[in-house]
Length: 465
Image (cartoon, rainbow, N blue to C red; front, side, top):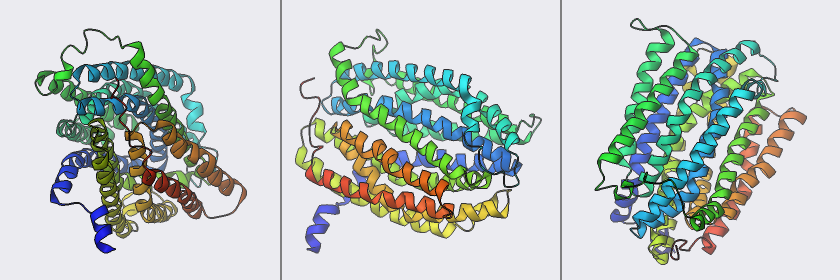
């Protein structure tokens, strides 16, 4: 029995070297990005609770845009990974051009939305008690930060087009190097512009926004220059801009597979924003506490998130090459590895939970809430690792309708109603409300296990392209 389980879920050295070769650069890039974001958050948190809360609210809104871009590009990305498995450069060019159109449309719509309704969206999170904070000041800081952050959407859009394609084609080192450089630039200019060091003006939240925007332009420049100067390695980039036309038959395929992903990421991100809004009705201190806990949680989540990205890349390439049996075996081991790694991360996170909130210049109530939020997030991290890996397994085989139902439909039909009802119609402590939302995901764990085990995702979607 033990040997059977070991054979099914534990790989050899070659397997882990292959997985970590793809996952570690992604972990490093995302880890450094989130670590520096944490430092940014701490820097803003040193100014005051209102500034920290205003920035946190805007970042929650920008997060919806980020996932829209991710979802919009992911549909074509499924094809990119499988085209790469078939060594079809022209197919990759078509997916790249489609990504350009999709990203531009989403970015323009987002900028128009924020310009027209930015203040209304921020106010949506300021309905609870002030808890000693200043709701109007939080609104003002949030608006200032939002207007600056809009300048960073175009470079973010462009770098996502390139980086997603590079990763789907197995190149993870360059995005990591560019990301590391960008976050160091961000960290440096945060220090200079938030506090006004070395002759720079002290701009507070505006300085934090400017530093982020500058870092995005630096990252974009590095990625674009490298991609276009290494044509022997990125052969698909040759002639990619000769035309922006994409064959109608392929557009139809991309939309059929991609529309559910775009809708899924949009609905999922908006659901996360809605969950935060549900918690926020309990007061400004809850918004601040969640901001602190989510900042630390994002740093520790990079492990299972990178493993999910690796599942999409490795399993997608195996499916594109028609290696179905190997894909199933590899997927089982990758899911098990992801859950194991997240258990280790959760243990470390539990140890840090009481200490991390003390760094912030805020109230004792906010610190206490943040510590308990962190503990809840740590306990449920292995569960989220399994769900994340299952999601990308289903997606790698083009099962985008299934992933749409599995992900965003579930969260809107189960998670949001739980949070909405418990936060508004009961006196349950908000920490337990957060835990109950996570417990609701047990249903999704069962569904994910069944779908992955049945192998509904084992299919080559580019064999007739």
